[in-house]
Amino acid sequence: MRTDNFFKLIQIDEYSATPKYLQLCDSIVEAIENGKLKKGDVLPSINELSYALDISRDTAEKGYKHLKKQNILVSVPGKGYYIGQTDFKKKIRVFLLFNKLSAHKKIIYDAFVAALGEEASIDFYIYNNDYTIFKKLILSKRSDYSHYVIIPHFVEGGDDAYQIINTIPAEKLILLDKKLEGIVGNYSAVYENFRQDIYQSLHQAKKELSKYHTLKLIFPDKSYYPTEIIDGFKLFCQQYAFNHQIIHDIESEPIAKGEVYINLMEHDLVTLIEKILSLNFELGKEVGIISYNETPLKKLLLNGITTISTDFKLMGTIAAEMIKNQISAHREIPFALTLRASL
Image 1: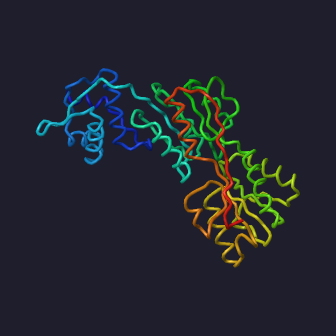
Image 2: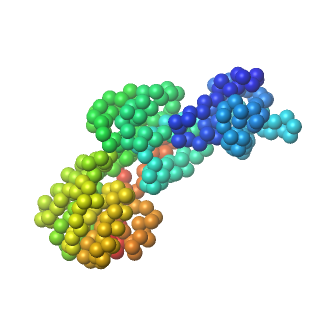
């Protein structure tokens, strides 16, 4: 194959969070599947690849070696790389769209990728909770994906997100982490029940909470978390006669003994701990903390921070299994309270 024709087959998207070497691999595999690259075709050298695609030499070499490991490419000293085989199972192609890549979102991503295995190619994008970017990515998506896996969380806007998502064939769609009203068709979902989850978790911690007189939920004005969390929090407090308050800015909130603080955002947890330590309050006795989303650090921080969290690894794994086994379903992921010294 002529070198200039080869480069027309390669797509490197600067906006994708997928590593460039994997984008290179996926483009070559797609070209083989479409019959545009055939067994025995010689590929450009690593230096040519690096120069033409404006990628590092290490990236180009890593891509070729990845395909060689799968026996798709063969290398001959002095001759370079060429297509070794074209008879392999057609790859699953996934458009994966996350609102952000936090510690717990990385757990979802890692579990999803591991469960899918090398038989899938994934184009991974992050829209940073910005609905304008979300909309642009959805509407400009390629049409040849086998599946679209989307986490729909926005700081502002998004009231018509369901209309944008409905442009995706329902049988190819998996909503992750959150369900949206207005999505039509036989789509799949692997999600949290935000209202019920916080209610049940607080109910499980009722004994520990009874030594405090006030529960405060830190829910910033600029937050992508669903307001159903507030509904579940209020329902619990009203049912069990706890004084309660919604705080929008922990920076300006005075900390008092006998209060429990429930944080959603990681930076609010840092601010909260700093303020408690500055007042020399004893965490777990004079004031309490419950933090959303389990992370390894929270097991160790201040003898342990109590968390309420969904099983993020299970969420990613189930989404991948739905794709591999061609399952269409709605699966609610379990939510757990982990009691530690902070309560």
